[in-house]
Length: 115
Image (cartoon, rainbow, N blue to C red):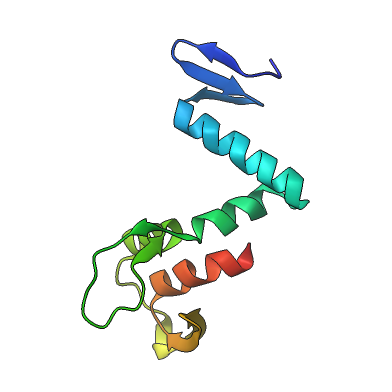
C-alpha cells in the first residue's frame, strides 16, 4: 500500500496507518514543502513547529501576540526545569540575544534554528 487509502475512517499514507484527515494534511504538506525546498522532512517539521502561529493573550510588556508549537510543548514538558549551576545559554527572542537557564525556553527558541 504505497498510496493513500481509507481504512475505517482513517487513512494509510507511506507506511503511516490510522492517520486522521488532519494528520494526513500535515504529512502531505510537509512532504511537499520538503521536496520543493530540497530539505529533509524532519528539517521542514522543525521549521514549522518553530513558527509563531498560535495566538496568545496579550500581557503587559509582551512583544509578540503569537507563540510557536515548540514553545508551548517545551513549556508543558519541562515546566520549571533549570540548567545546573545557574548555567545560562544565549537565545534569540524578538531580535535580541537573551541569556536564560530555563530548559523549556532554550528548547522553544532553538528548535526553529536547528531546523
